[in-house]
Amino acid sequence: APNAPQTTVMLLHGSDLFVPIIVTSDYLWCLCCFHKLSAGLYQDGFQIQGDIAVPINRNADPCVQRGCKWPKSSDGKVYIPYVIANSYTSQQLRVITTAINSFSASTCIRFIPRTTQTDYINIKSLDGCYSYVGRQGNVQTVSLKSQGCIYFGTVQHELIHALGFNHEQCRSDRDQHIKILLQNVIPGMAYNFDKINTLNQGTPYDYNSVMHYGRLAFSKDNVSPTMVAIPNSNAVFGTATQMSQNDIDRINLLYCSK
Image (tube, rainbow, N blue to C red):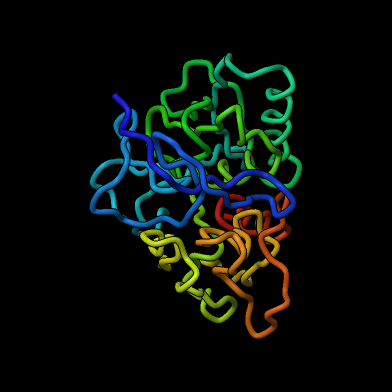
């Protein structure tokens, strides 16, 4: 049975792409950084940590070091099978498939409908927007809840997680580019701003990445910023509605250049 409802953070699509508000939910429905929790919320055999699903007992080591890349075919393309649940409306399905197909325009990634492949992505409407980081083996869930998650940039965001990438504000070099204001963070949510030992592939920190959250993410009052850019505190970030050129470059560097 689901846990008793709790107050948490939902990040909905809006003018800042993901706008934090306080909601009541049975499960954690939000977008946040990858962190190893001593206790968390569970569904279908995995633990939900923000918008990243983590198999039980896995830690926050960089995904690539665990061998999470999807394999490249002899033609230089990376074919990733997927299935989509039949619970979406035709309009929602168009948004999802358009975002899925967008990767083929600028990268070697080819999401293809599954036939008999063992390893594949299962897109369905569960409690929120979340994904595993990288290839897990066998079927792996990407949850795109039909209420709140069906936006072009949100679908790209979760699929980029499935390719092996974490959030921009969690980069190992983020302290050179943003300042975290923990005093403004919802109590108990500070872990969302932990850094990860990421593989940045020589690419610059990107305020325009679709993987970057906005200045009010996890704000305790939805007014006080939890992140500010440095050295220019007026710099805008977290407003992307689609992959940036840096997002594309990183995918190509990880998958398409070798």
